[in-house]
Image (cartoon, rainbow, N blue to C red; front, side, top):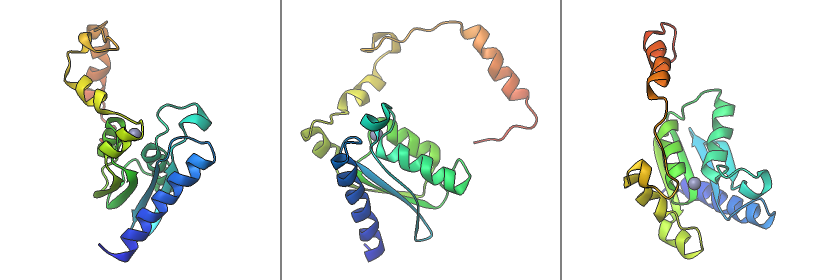
Length: 158
Ligand SMILES: [Zn+2]
């Protein structure tokens, strides 16, 4: 591991501690790096912003994409103080960075009271049988939007 990479992770860990101490949210921090430079960062902001999606990785991805003025993190490295939860894992795959480094594991997070194992289990359950039931409604009408999208000539693929 290069010294620079260790320093980026230390920064993510510092953000985790600072965010928690400021009362912004849980002890999670994230730094996004491109070509050796920090282009985005964040800590958990769930409590401060009343936003359940404001996990450190999502906050940092939004910051990095805003700075890059692009919806992809091509060639970027993500340094997160803890292994991403299923939501952040999804966000990371949509943002498509080159690599992710994580410090604490999801088992460590679980021991601290941040258990996301149930979400992984929910993914495998039939939508109608999930703890939050999901019911299919107006599929045919909604398919029209896909038909228009498929025919749209000037769309940006992502
Ligand atoms: Zn998350």
